Length: 101
Image (cartoon, rainbow, N blue to C red; front, side, top):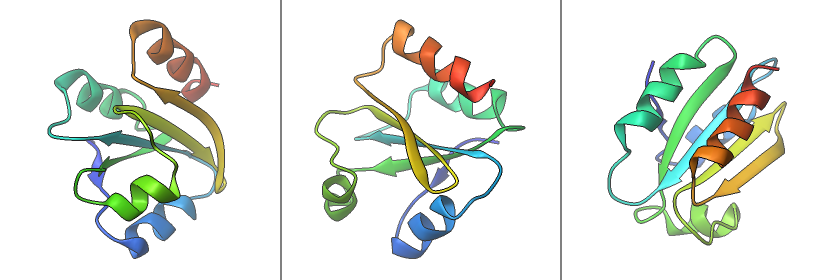
Protein backbone atom coordinates (compact mmCIF):
# COMPACT_ATOMS: atom_id res chain seq x y z
CA UNK A 1 0.00 0.00 0.00
CA UNK A 2 1.32 3.43 -0.89
CA UNK A 3 0.72 6.63 1.01
CA UNK A 4 -2.87 7.80 1.38
CA UNK A 5 -3.19 11.53 0.70
CA UNK A 6 -4.45 13.69 3.55
CA UNK A 7 -6.75 16.33 2.05
CA UNK A 8 -8.92 17.71 4.85
CA UNK A 9 -9.39 17.84 8.62
CA UNK A 10 -11.55 14.70 8.63
CA UNK A 11 -8.69 12.79 6.96
CA UNK A 12 -6.22 14.06 9.58
CA UNK A 13 -8.54 13.25 12.47
CA UNK A 14 -9.16 9.72 11.16
CA UNK A 15 -5.44 9.10 10.65
CA UNK A 16 -4.48 10.31 14.12
CA UNK A 17 -7.28 8.24 15.70
CA UNK A 18 -5.58 5.03 14.50
CA UNK A 19 -4.93 2.62 17.37
CA UNK A 20 -2.36 -0.17 17.67
CA UNK A 21 -0.40 0.92 14.57
CA UNK A 22 2.09 3.61 13.79
CA UNK A 23 0.86 6.49 11.66
CA UNK A 24 3.54 7.81 9.32
CA UNK A 25 2.93 11.19 7.67
CA UNK A 26 5.27 12.21 4.87
CA UNK A 27 5.05 15.99 4.46
CA UNK A 28 6.32 17.18 1.08
CA UNK A 29 5.89 19.67 -1.74
CA UNK A 30 5.65 18.58 -5.37
CA UNK A 31 6.00 14.82 -5.73
CA UNK A 32 6.68 11.88 -3.43
CA UNK A 33 9.93 10.13 -4.41
CA UNK A 34 9.70 6.42 -5.30
CA UNK A 35 11.79 5.30 -2.26
CA UNK A 36 9.22 6.90 0.06
CA UNK A 37 6.43 5.01 -1.70
CA UNK A 38 8.39 1.76 -1.37
CA UNK A 39 8.85 2.30 2.37
CA UNK A 40 5.09 2.79 2.75
CA UNK A 41 4.63 -0.70 1.29
CA UNK A 42 7.50 -2.18 3.32
CA UNK A 43 5.97 -1.22 6.68
CA UNK A 44 2.29 -1.74 5.84
CA UNK A 45 1.90 -4.46 8.51
CA UNK A 46 2.78 -2.10 11.38
CA UNK A 47 2.13 1.32 9.88
CA UNK A 48 -0.53 3.33 8.10
CA UNK A 49 1.28 5.68 5.72
CA UNK A 50 -0.09 9.06 4.69
CA UNK A 51 1.20 11.92 2.61
CA UNK A 52 0.63 15.62 3.05
CA UNK A 53 1.37 18.15 0.32
CA UNK A 54 2.13 21.17 2.51
CA UNK A 55 2.17 23.38 -0.56
CA UNK A 56 -1.58 22.75 -0.91
CA UNK A 57 -2.42 22.60 2.80
CA UNK A 58 -0.84 25.59 4.53
CA UNK A 59 -3.03 25.23 7.65
CA UNK A 60 -1.81 21.66 8.14
CA UNK A 61 1.78 22.85 7.67
CA UNK A 62 1.24 25.38 10.45
CA UNK A 63 -0.65 22.95 12.71
CA UNK A 64 2.12 20.33 12.55
CA UNK A 65 4.81 23.06 12.69
CA UNK A 66 6.52 21.85 9.51
CA UNK A 67 9.36 24.20 8.63
CA UNK A 68 11.35 22.12 6.13
CA UNK A 69 10.36 19.52 3.57
CA UNK A 70 10.41 16.68 3.37
CA UNK A 71 9.48 16.04 6.98
CA UNK A 72 8.46 12.67 8.38
CA UNK A 73 6.10 12.53 11.34
CA UNK A 74 5.41 9.30 13.22
CA UNK A 75 2.46 9.00 15.60
CA UNK A 76 1.33 6.18 17.88
CA UNK A 77 -2.13 6.26 19.46
CA UNK A 78 -2.54 9.93 18.51
CA UNK A 79 0.77 11.10 20.00
CA UNK A 80 3.80 12.23 18.00
CA UNK A 81 6.70 9.87 18.75
CA UNK A 82 9.24 10.94 16.11
CA UNK A 83 9.88 13.82 13.72
CA UNK A 84 12.62 14.00 11.10
CA UNK A 85 13.17 17.00 8.85
CA UNK A 86 15.00 16.83 5.53
CA UNK A 87 15.21 13.08 5.16
CA UNK A 88 18.62 11.46 4.69
CA UNK A 89 19.75 7.81 4.91
CA UNK A 90 20.65 8.06 8.61
CA UNK A 91 17.29 9.64 9.45
CA UNK A 92 15.42 7.02 7.43
CA UNK A 93 17.25 4.27 9.32
CA UNK A 94 16.09 5.69 12.67
CA UNK A 95 12.50 5.74 11.43
CA UNK A 96 12.77 2.19 10.07
CA UNK A 97 14.04 0.97 13.46
CA UNK A 98 11.08 2.60 15.18
CA UNK A 99 8.53 1.18 12.72
CA UNK A 100 9.97 -2.30 13.20
CA UNK A 101 9.81 -2.10 17.01
